[in-house]
Length: 299
Image (cartoon, rainbow, N blue to C red; front, side, top):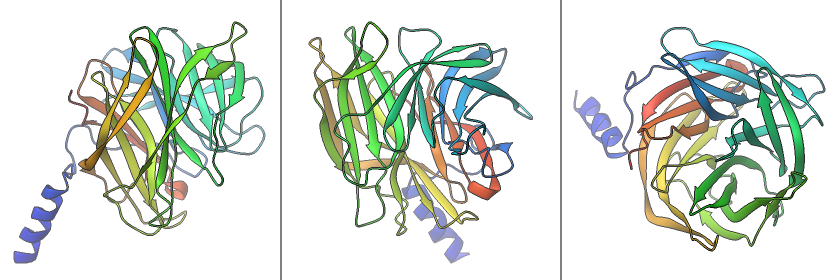
């Protein structure tokens, strides 16, 4: 009993989200081809939350994008047809603020795709490489922020254990008249996750930004295609965009762990607009994928 009390105290100190808190995990994929590598809020259907989900598949003809309606009971899952140049290893997707039906999806090597989603089809409008890609960068995260009539993008090299922290990038974003994403001056910040701390920890596996500008990131540890997995979601600082379009990222000296999720590899976190709720998604490799909602995004 003493051991149990100590363990409970430790998990409380870490900000652990207890099993069963908010929404329970719902299974949305049964194998390595159907995990959730990234997700974007699309809207609501009745009491359900519609999200677009990217899969990190690499072979021609494999599914790249799906729609999930997450709610009570079994989630509804439907494939989205990808119309355009086929990406390899999609890891993140984000809605473009102020442009209904438009999204940006990011592949691990740094190619970002601008999409128009209509019904069950996603059409590629254009694509471009991210700027300032560093040696060995491996991207799993992408977020967009709209403030003062300006748009900014955040993305990160995921990092790898103690020897390689994540590199968080930020830049102003505009679009050329023909649709191509155009990035402004890039800033960089190094980030190490406070949890998990395993050797292969991916310090940033996804990014979301609250309505007030708080940066919420997921971090994940992966011991192999059959696990074990471990994850956390943390509040790591703030981002602002000035009226002139300048982007400022301020990392917290001590990030706050909002929840830990042993047994799952969280690769997607999305703060819902006007809500404290986040939708989390996992890519648990051979064990498939799961989604749930958790209250992590208070202003």
